[in-house]
Every structure is written in C-alpha cells, then in structure tokens.
Length: 541
Image (tube, rainbow, N blue to C red):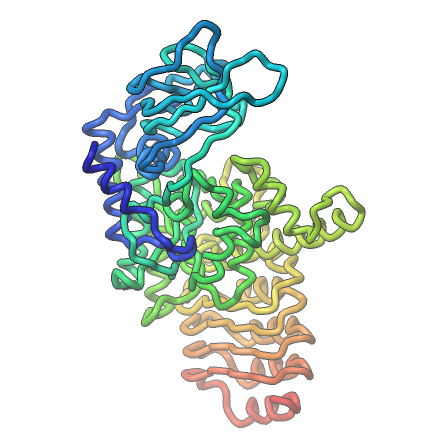
C-alpha cells in the first residue's frame, strides 16, 4: 500500500487535458490492469455481483474497480457535513465507509472506502440539533458523491446521511497515472464505455498497425483516461465548446470511431456530437474499426473502414481491406438523430443542445428555430457521411436501394440519403476497380444522388469496364450550377467514346474553375471528343 501511495503522490501533473493522449503501449497496460483485476482480484459487477469475465469487462466496470481508486487523491477523499447518528461516537480510523442507494438493489455500493480521519465540524449556526462530522478516507471502489441519487453514507452500518460536499482535491487522470509525458492527440477516440476494454485496446492496436504508426504517431485521446474522473467539472467546462472533448477533437488529425456489435455510439449524444464536429471538417480523417461477431468462435480480428485511402494504398487494396467490415453497423449511423442521443448525465445533453441552438434558452422561439435548423444540418451531415462510407460495399452487395437489416422494415435508399444533404459542399468517392458491380445503372444512381450545393466533386471509376457513354450523359445532366472543382477518373473504361465526352462537356457548369478528366486507356476518345470539350469548356477553367 505504501508503494502504491508513493506512486500516487507523483501522479498529479501540469498536463493540460488535451495533452493526455495515450499510446498503444500505455493502452496495453490498461489491458494488463483489467487482466489482473479479473484473474487475481476476482472483480464483480456492481449491479449483479457476478464475477467479471476478462473478455467482457467494460470501461464502466474498470472505472469502478480500478481507475477511480487509482486516481483518487493520495491524501484521501473528504466527505463534509455528514450527520452523526444519535448516541454514536466519532468513528475510528480503519472502519469501512460505504455509500449506497438501497432502493436500487445493487450488489455493491456506489462507493467504498477505509476511514483515515474523522472530526467534528464547527457549529453551523442553524437551528438543527444534529452533530455534523467530516470524514477523510482512502477510496477502495467507485466514487463518493453529494448527489442524493448516489445514496446515503454508512459507517459500520450506521446511517450518516448524504454528504453536503465531497472533495477530491489533488486527484489526477488515469493517463497521468500511466505517464507524465505530454502527448497531444493524433486520433480522437469516439466510443461507448460499455464495450469490452480488451476489444477497445485491440481496435486501437490494429488501427496503429494498419496505418503503420510509430509509438509517437499513434496518440489516442480517450475521455475515460484523459479526464480527471474525480474533478470532471473542471475538464468538461460549462458548455460543449469549452469541454475537453471539443479541445482534443480540434487538435486531432482524425476521429477513430470504435463500434461494438450493436453500434451503441450512434445512440449516444456525445458520440454523435463528436462525429458531427469531425465530419464538418473536410480535412479531418475518419476511421471506423470494430471487432465483428463471428459465430462459433470467441475471437475475431478487428476490421477497419476509412473515409479516405490510407497512405500508399491503392483503391483495390482499400476495397480488399474493407471487404470483411460488417457493413450493416453503418445503418445505425445513417439513421442517427443527434437530438435522440442518450446521455449518462442529462446536463451534458442540455449543454450540447444549447450549443447547437446557440442559446441557453431552448424554449424561446428563436432558440427552437435555430436548434431545428442546426439539428437538421447535423443529422444530414452525419447520415450522408456514413452513406458515402457504406456506398462502395453496398453497391458491391446490391444494397444501394435497400440498405438495412433484413428484419428491419425501415431500410434506406442510399441515393435519397445522400441527395438530402443540402449542406454538403465536397464529395469524394472512389468506386475504382469495382468492375463487376459498377456499370451505367450504378453511375446513374450516383448522379441523381449528388447533393444540390456541391462545390467540389471527386469521383473515381478506374477499371470499371462496364461503364459506357450513358454514364457520362447521366453525370453531365446532374452536375450542379455551384460546382467549382470537378475531378473524374475513367482510366481503363474502354467503352467510353467521343459521344460520351461531348455529353459530359455539354453539362459542365459555367462557374467551374478546376477540371481534371482522366481517360487513359479509353481508345474511343479522340479529336472529335476533345473538340466538343473545348467548345463547352467554361471560361474560368
């Protein structure tokens, strides 16, 4: 215990919350702590009392048994203004102190500690005859709270009521417990705390491996490890934009969305908000990783889906890499509604909606109007982002017009979801080398789905040999007037001729400023097609 306390005393640092990203090596130490707790200490679930399985222990449980006790102040947690039971003497050091809401029927208390000191408080100056005491204790499980929902405090089974104040001054984050090295995030992890810790660590480890990241390049910001859990109000701030989440998200080069088999993050308002903030930044990467459920086996390798090609990755390699991703997980992202997201702390939900409304008054006419407008923009953006991510594999599996689980009647037409995003200004999508799945019908579907306010369009069809002039006609007819940049890759689409190029050229919008067309290997295009292109070329290109 003394060695552990000395370790604790060294943990409080001056690291800013946005500097508390962890490396894969540090995440493996988290997994080791979970292993030790389950195997050696026989941790039990707080609610049911069942012994925890190493493969299933989640962050809620790890926090209760390990993170909260590890990161408590080395000098102890202080409970103030407890009521000494009538006839009782001041409790002695070494006695067990618990806080429990007996109405919940949980197997384990909200918090447990060992008493270090107890003292009487000065007279409070009210009319009460009660005697008030302050307790200082070493935390063993969970965390004590002044919230009545957390229950009352018991010392040796005597009821001391609910503390008026709980002080955990000098606590620290779990990142600080692991390392005092400052690390700004390269990747922001958006995830559900109920996912198994070992699966989370495996996903980050696989992500780092696939992206070929060094230890210093793979810096993952994880809220449960970065925030000081005993002093959350300081890290979270008063509104969403002032929170540690928002600050870390702005610094990260990309978001790593880690999905459990039920895609729970899409039903959490914080995760939806994080994803919305991320997808509104076109320069920010978005990677999605999950451990698929495989029948008949307890283990499966994490699968990665990415918004863009990875460094030095070809479209063919990307398609092969994503083939094993359980595509229907994205269905939950396509139907997500930010305002329907759940929150463990309801105040968080209010703060996010207030940020979206630009007002603390959500009931005013202006507040309601702005909130409705911004929520539509956020939802359209989220839904279309996951539509684009799903599109190549959905096309391969003939699911573009009916995307969703077979048992769910509320399937989606992906073209309709994409077209509904009036706020999308940049679309990049590669269907290269889907030669058996991508033909005129599929290009026509995509053409009709182009969002109305696009300014940049980048489409790749390299190696799609079934494409003919009909595809270029469809694209030319659907190019939007506000388009400023157009990139089309038809390398190897040998069925395209001068006729198709003239169709496309006739549809180029007058305001276009940048144009790249790639027709290598298209022997049917010659002087006549180029003449037609020159004739219709916008003046500012």
